[in-house]
Image (cartoon, rainbow, N blue to C red; front, side):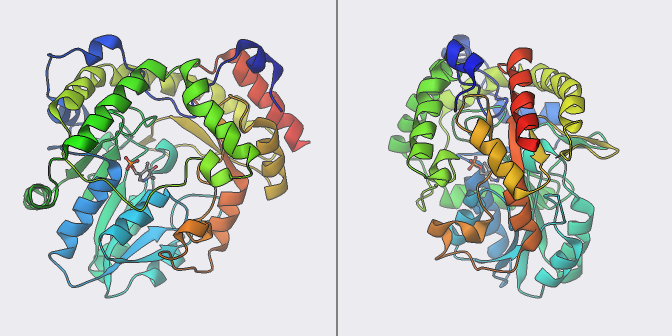
Length: 407
Ligand SMILES: *Cc1c(COP(=O)(O)O)cnc(C)c1O
């Protein structure tokens, strides 16, 4: 199953282009201005640091729920399972909305009919670094009196019309989890345009997020491990080996890292991790620019694969490129491509294995619904890393394997 060149080199290319840490980042001292520095770079009014993107969503939902008797949150049917777990954590209901054909955006008709006078919020998602259609979701939210939350967990640095994503809705959040661009192993940033809402988000955080020495210590150790192992050799041990074990065991959900715990830690981020992030953040703009340059070169080759569509920016959008999202002609072709490439160390796999209702472990909390486009999207897409460790030769190997799956 392994592609010879990778096997020979004994490496593992990470599935996303995450910013590698340097040892200097871990040394004490230096500016501890993570949120302020990123806010200035993104030109957003302020950022609020939480312990994960999921924790950001929890703070956002709790803030909205405290102001409204409404109880339903509308989610895209194909997204990170943590989003559903956050809604459940807050004691709210979720309603899943189907996607537009061959896209991660909401299906407009489905979104309109998903909204009613119990809709507390709509979560619109900037998946894979691409910019979502926030305009339409905002009109739906306004019409039914709901708030709009922008899930930009995968899109730190993405812009539309020169402005950072996250400000068109009421609340936005970014993730600083391992492998998501800038990482402090687990972290998240909240953003909101309206100053009163920003104060309310901070007040919720002050009220519900406490210190937890055990969790923070664990995250500090994990961040050191991440700094040491995030690279083509370390990832083989930390990521590739357990992934291949899960694939051999016939457990794609675990192999994709989609098997999250219902127990979501919510705690303060400590000063050391914040300072590590602040130092690494200085390198993020140049790192994202390089990733964009690499993406521009590789898009043409991927797009020329017969029958393959690569999700790209629409006019006025400047997304980020942690990986490429490919839509293959049909589910069988996608299955063949995964058979050839998933688990070979080349950074190719499904982004999420299923739509939310199709994860067994989520069945108790996620309502089923007819979601033909989302299920089709889940079965036909795969992600190809845009990590700089995927050099030209390895990228060629990926394209070659895809071509043979497409034949
Ligand atoms: C990762 C992710 C989240 C959750 O962010 P964490 O920082 O991992 O908690 C939410 N939404 C999407 C689309 C994600 O990819």
